[in-house]
Length: 72
Image (cartoon, rainbow, N blue to C red):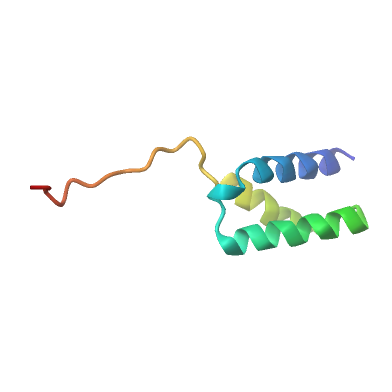
């Protein structure tokens, strides 16, 4: 049951930050959500992939800008 709550929380988080996902990630998350709603569970590999997407979605990281090119 604890795992289900964590999965739901991850889906909610990714929904709020879906604009930061790539097209492939977004399609994958949507398909996992459909599967989860229908079957009420995810496999270990599906769960791991979902958590990895959330983990590497760095919301707080600021973009870096290079000073390699000088503007005139």
